[in-house]
Image (cartoon, rainbow, N blue to C red):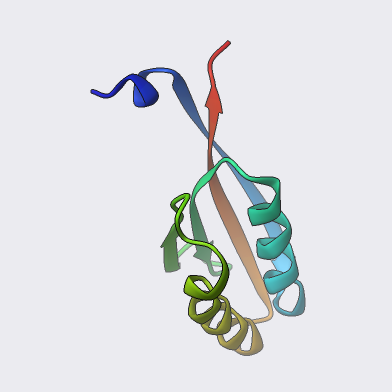
Length: 90
């Protein structure tokens, strides 16, 4: 295991949002940083999409993912956003 992986803890957070708020919430979460993965689930808990995030996935490379999330948001009324974050151990 790499040194970087040993020094990090993973935790998850869940946010329940309405369809129109999904895109803004995802942008806000990405801006906060330290996110490894975003999972979008419907009201029944079924996973719609998992978005793995890496340090290199920013800007123009992330635009198609945001477009897909925006299209998905137009189809649903409520979703749960599950965020997997890494926290460096102190």
